[in-house]
Length: 321
Image (tube, rainbow, N blue to C red; front, side):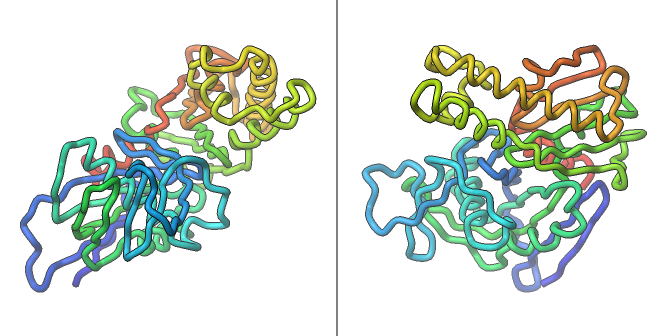
């Protein structure tokens, strides 16, 4: 077995050989973004709750069978873990994510997969190796997801930096900018100069969308005499307002406005010039900033596709290595 590492453009990879020769089967390339509330691929999205079950569910929807155990994947949001490597949850999510991407691409069978994933920019040096080793199982992986059996080797695992990946193919002629990645639990802020990410000018703060969700639930309870469901909040953010109870809308709007104000206040605190710097909002909170951010202008862009990091991992793998 041989290993290789390439840290250009925030990547680290592992390669696996079968005996003395690499299997010549063309590997399928899969990119996954392991979020704190969901897992995204280039084409798929699902919530990240992992529920072990000791019975046969009514349907195969979300059913993962691995090493003699059954799990329901999705159907809710996982509570925040201290790290993504502390238990098997994110590896099980990886199996489900690969399976869903293969299904989307209508690939029924493959014996080799290359996996591209990421870690937060500010934790890249500390977490990339551990996350790669956590994901990269050298033995053949065999499991069933939603009634379909999969069996393949992970030939390669590459880890990139979140936030930068989301804008790597979107910078155009902007040589200098700030990328603001608004995720479920954190806000990452990255400076880019001459299209190169500045390691020493990157920040992570606990200003995630979940804080807004919890505030909205708390404020809604005495006003509408129930806890506003997260589904209604996320539907509102996605623009599916017709599915949201009319009583909830003013409370949701107030909570999201407070969130946008908090994001802009934090950016000003770290000397981000909202009126003149090129700023790209990405992540789940980008849609909130587009609607509720008070500072508007040609210098501000919004990447509202929550799959942007996964798409960026694949872009970096194909164009940078």
